[in-house]
Image (cartoon, rainbow, N blue to C red):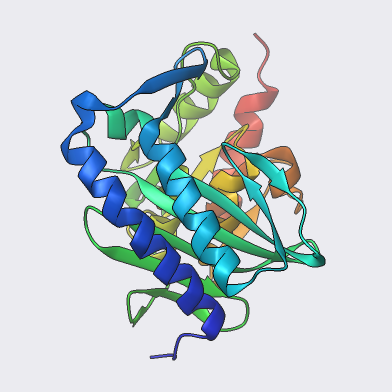
Length: 268
């Protein structure tokens, strides 16, 4: 078991504090104020409260760092090398429907590279964390991606575009391709947790398109530090810029990437 660094302790402490209010809001979700950012894209008072707590707590510990916040946007810090990348409530739609599957995601970027990440699931009290060169952990247990080698034995996570978002025809082609040769596909509604589940070996892989940087920052590091392989759909490393991701163990990554690429090449 690796000892948590001061950085991870700061991130975990902030997530735990934000989660306390989030759970109270979840238990009274019918009374929350909700606004619409875009079709089927919501922001609740819970998102805003959690983001405020996270910003306050992280600023206390690292006052010179900047932020990239899902709701408030970019905040420039005196230290140009570091910024926190935060999704205060990944899985807002689940949250608002009373589905207990959502997370707080915090990534730390240094000189353009994600070097630490925390994904906290408050309903299960699961703290996934990773630091570059240190490994990935769930609470205090070291994580490794799954060892499965055959698509037919494997389960993959993904996201499904909804009203007003995404290229539905292209996505359906990739979904059909993966469905036909695997043991199953799961769509749970929180990309940061999907990636944490890949790191934990619960999913054998994950793919999705058009995600935001705060959806990916912490989760992609979790997978890498757990021994997995992460690329964009072109096979490169522009994941945070493109929002397109294919993540899996090293045995299955190429197979999953091949299925997705071949599906996207199909006409119509």
